[in-house]
Length: 201
Image 1 (cartoon, one colour):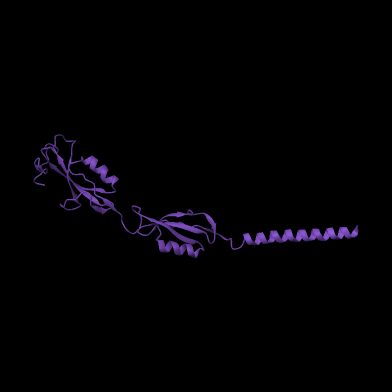
Image 2 (spheres, one colour; image 1 turned 180 degrees about the vertical axis):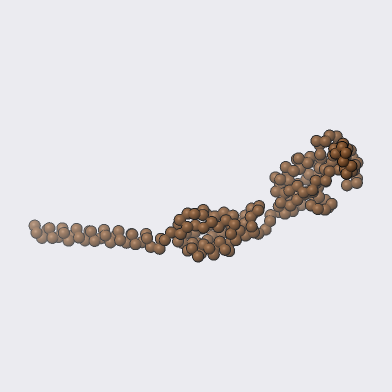
């Protein structure tokens, strides 16, 4: 009986030792190098500096995509995952979306003799282009003040026609020649009658 008790005691000691060893191993393994670091806010930071900053913190910076964003600095971070402020373990991957250095090209829409000024403005905005100078001239084909048809479209700052279907940089300005009635300005004598055929444009 005494021998059985001794054997049971030895077995219990072995079991406790094994259990303690397992818990010690798990505790040591899970806590190994698990110092938390805070994800920095990298939006607006140049890609090279952002990657360097992450490396200094023991994090892995990964460029996941490059896109174009209006107003963002060239080659700057415009999105990150995980977001700034999160506490993560060292070695965590941080994915960055970078603003491309190249402004994308867009197709010039066909506005002349097909749209009003308001319609042209909306079409340009949808095409990621801007309305530049609006040149208003009296045209005998215009019947009411509200018509304001677009007669021609020019490269901004020039009188060179901007051909529909060609490509220009996104956010470029387009100057518009717009027809108005003779009484549009009433006392304003700066408007010029170009005739119904637009021959003096």
